[in-house]
Amino acid sequence: MLGRSFGIIGLGNFGSTIATDLERFGDYVIGIDIDKQRVSRHVDQLSQALIVDATDEEALREAGVGECDVALVAIGEDLEASLLAAVNCKLVGAGEVWAKAFSRTHHRILSRIGVDRVIHPEVEIGQRIAQVLHNPLVRDYVSLGNGYHVVRFRMPESLEGKALSELAHTEEHELRCVGVMRGTEFIGRDGMDCELAADDLLLLLGKRDDLRDFAAKL
Ligand code: ATP
Image (cartoon, rainbow, N blue to C red):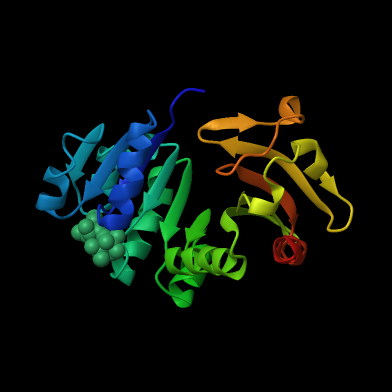
């Protein structure tokens, strides 16, 4: 797949992390900030780093944000600047507009003005941490909706030496083991005979209560 292009507006911790990671993945990233020092820190790290006031529609257009696949507004505290920047990204014609919200009201207004995806980092991280705290064996998870999750599960000692096929489908808990991460190697369907080892991470699919129940009985 060819790299995508992004306009990241606001190079604070949040915007800067996203911008530099996308650049590392091979995407084309235009980083924008009103603060000269923040921009100069990114000059060598991004495809372009520009001093622009995102509340100025024309300046944003000239910066090339209208040609980006996605414009992401990562201005946190200044509500007016965040909303104006988001509207301007839409007006200049960015493919999609994403924006960070710092409150429910901010979130609602961004949705109302047609922002394609509103990110509320504190809420999203809080939900993630709660899932991981709730089940002590869970290292990480992805929510699939309707209560289903894929989780990365620390290998309990009681499963060491068992074959992956024995876990492939546990009738009792309606869980599916879709594979194992052994270091950086993924062992899937082809490795159903392999014996589970101490540092493996199991990839399990199921509902939260079943995952919790399964962990409690190990
Ligand atoms: P973070 O929480 O991501 O660390 P922060 O708290 O340092 O961010 P915020 O107020 O959330 O700062 O703003 C993020 C960035 O957005 C800052 O670097 C700020 O200079 C920039 N910014 C604010 N207003 C504008 C604007 N009108 N145009 C472009 N950039 C702006």
